[in-house]
Image (cartoon, rainbow, N blue to C red; front, side):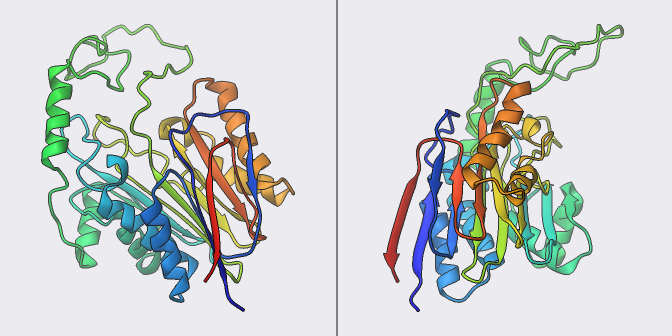
Length: 327
């Protein structure tokens, strides 16, 4: 029987509204955040060629890394405070529940590929920083500078604007006016207020990808270069299982994009899969996850994509694009 193919992209920016998008149909299914069509097609072509759901996620995310999707995935984007680009990625096999991930990966372009090697060749889940780079080199990956002229210029402009915006608080000098280095005051009045977002939501365009194989096998993954001008060493939600993405063959899969510092506190991908396990439609599951986050952080910027093993999917927003044609 000929497959019918489906891929779905979410159109950015991700502004959370009351609308739910629902679709259902035949498997297989490739679903990802943001209008990264080449990544979606790369994943689909992998499936058509006989690859697994895990292979499809890797190839789709790797395509975004090569193309530097929206300058928020791959090399040459989102420099940290020191001007360096580092990468986070994760891949999860919903059949075995095995996960491989890397955080704050330095000098290696193919972060999702390294994550796959962590999954396949170690008993660990997450490797970070210089040690993740050392592991990658032992697996045959090439060490190279991830900075570009564009990322260097971006960092220089940020320095010229007194390091605004940044992610420091309760420090001296005043981080809202000056560059660091920063230190805590000797006597610090505890800030017990709710986290205040900077208002600069640009740069959260992680690729999150969900694949449901024609046989019902699931996989999910993420890849990102994180927040622009983040404090060096910061790792967001993308490489955290259950936060950035989650998959389980008995239910389905989900992936997230948005403000990772907030999202990882709620494990939204895991929670979405659990809602679906309880019988919720994927669109309702996604919306419930986002609503829970917004209860505590009303200005939260992000979204979750959800799909179950019957081929139904949902997103907590209005805009999507869908295609179907015989192979």
